[in-house]
Image (cartoon, rainbow, N blue to C red; front, side, top):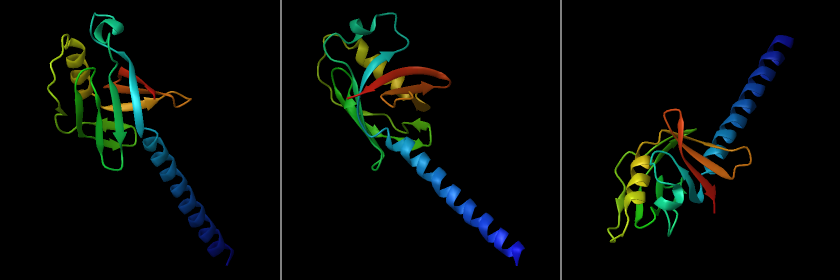
Length: 144
């Protein structure tokens, strides 16, 4: 009898703990939702403000629909996204408008860097999003 109660207690505890961890994982992914503004990007030898003198790129995550959209400093873009726990990738090339931009180097750097993203992380306060390629944080965004 005591053995049966112990087994029942153990499975109950296991079930509750599994549900808690699932909620935690969903909470991390749900933090992506909303609009973010680029504050840092790796790669170019041009200063950040030189790449984006007029307008900083933005990204908007719609996790329920597996969509991402935003502005790359000149053109609007949209596309699909796959997010699982802290892994992220863009399975297809983004669709973008084709407005004429005087200096499109920042736009090209942004789209190229975005396509290489493999994962993401947040700062402890949740206000900064890091997009990571391999093990290097290549883009940093702040919540708008």
